[in-house]
Image 1 (tube, one colour):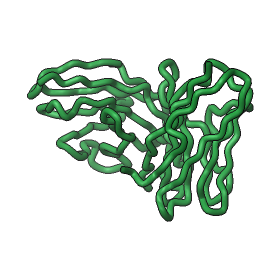
Image 2 (cartoon, chains in turn cyan, purple):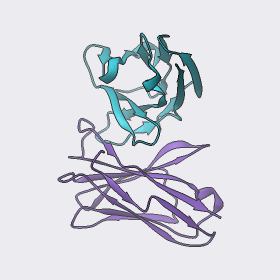
Image 3 (cartoon, rainbow over the protein chains, first blue to last red):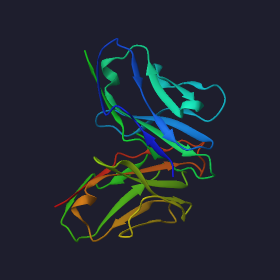
Image 4 (tube, each protein chain N blue to C red):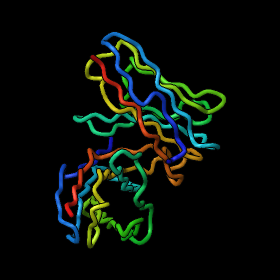
Length: 114
Length: 114
């Protein structure tokens, strides 16, 4: 069964700092990759996704992620964070096996100080 | 608002009891997923229904069961509750049973077992 590791449980940044959240998965086959975000008091929502093609994908709110197959990684990046990016971020993997279910990492809580 | 509704928002009960959590998917969505979020395990997939049929099973205990009704709403039944079942239970829905269809998450039901 696949698993997802998010290395940082908590990250604290100042506004305008650059962000990179790590995500590694353990599955040797073809994968579909996702980042979800949960803002305080809100539901989980999709930030970006990768199925195939260009390994650099862009999502909403200026976020992007890069799929590096050789490293089994799908790190999330943003060049300059804002206070409104304070949220919990979840990486998720789907093994391309015909099922649509997702395996989530444990999440990274990002706190951006103004 | 994702369009997915869950009731109740909060549930407090005692060990050994049984509870039912309800999920109404977005209008027209045929697929419903249940997830459990706890501090130690993170966000874990429990079970998926598609158009009334069980489609996939994850880390769901035998004390837990679910069903999807003809009107497509779903219920998650948790019985013989233990302290460790205290968690946030999310439901998500998608249009079809495909990883290419985004999963939309509800606000969750917070279950506290005393």
